[in-house]
Length: 603
Image 1 (tube, rainbow, N blue to C red):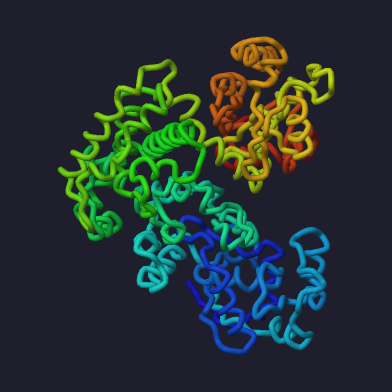
Image 2 (cartoon, one colour):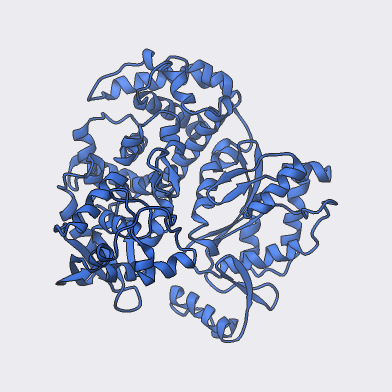
């Protein structure tokens, strides 16, 4: 692995940024976490001509050519520089003058960002030129393998003073347990995404606060952790949610509460330590997918219980520790593990959210608490006490919450947020009825749904896709539904949850009858096998607040899918028929995955 230190002007860096040539690998990189104040200090240093720390890039061997780089060190700095150019914030009350930089002006004119109003103070022409000419100290590793990049990142950041305890643990470690916790944390926060993103996509999956208002995709106060008073915004920024999930996941794998301390958490992430080896062995036996699925489902059911009791912020904290403004981390751990026992281990479902929350009143005061170290036996007593308080409000239902309805709510929200980046794998329909005054059924919709399922399957063999019915992807449709059906759409990301219950009422049928019409349309279609059978087995409903949404999962396929003799693909969010050379190219996408084992005459 060779290194090539050199200077890179801010102008050149911005070109790479806008050409989507700078990548971020979420296996080891943090989300965007700098505050506006921290960004402003860096920009001031550049404007004064002061040196700033080195930026490390790795040339991507998988990017299809030279000039594509993965950011090893310098993510926060590069985002600060480019977001300043794009008028996300001012420094000393002055914005960068976009009119002085043709490339940024073009990006703004094309809708890439919103320029500062003309009446705001701007840097002078001379200051803008000096800023763009500033030479960033850059070292490029070329070529670099994934393992080398990860190793370098870990060595640089494991001792970094600016990283939190959990970020130091995670830095450069891609072992199964660490990777599972990292992925779980992103799912529960709501910033789950594909593993490798361009730098320009990072704000979409980063966390803002209402006070900072940096226009990121998520707001800390809207995450479960902060909304319910489990963590403060600053603790979320420092990845304490991942620390809590590591604690929960380890407790599940050990089949007893972890004896929690800073030192024990460190050992969970220290290769070769006794508990590291024990956890990795237990995870291999338990299964990382199973563990993640069960924890997410438990979170979904717990959140639904809390929000059914009260939609207000801090509903959980106000119950378990009334009058307090302190985070309720210990109480949350006990409540979560009790829900896990009842929902996962006993396959029960909540029957009375109000009864559960009332039973948890003043739980914090009733618990055994210690400042820096939690003994296993004390945590067992806390969990047993909590379970005893709430278990009479859980019952056996078919299907259980773990596999249905409330248990899918978290995955549903993540789909809505991910869809803005991975548009081709997601499709949303507001319903089966037209939004005209007569609310007539759309006779062409079933075939369009079948074609879309085919197209999503043809995106590629490496990941599933989803089609949701009961979600509007246009604000105009959401407003029309609000007028017609007298309900308020729930906005999640860029989508609007409207549910299908309103159409069930218009059609005067039962929910099962509504769903069976969709199932019959797919069953009687010419959708190719095995896709048809797999899709029919993957139709479910999601209970999201007071709405029912149909979810159709499209599993990854081993070969090109068809509707009769026709095949379809996705171009962003559009479904398009494909034929000729394009069809041959599509077949090649699947051949690479299966080693050219499918007969050529299939297409």
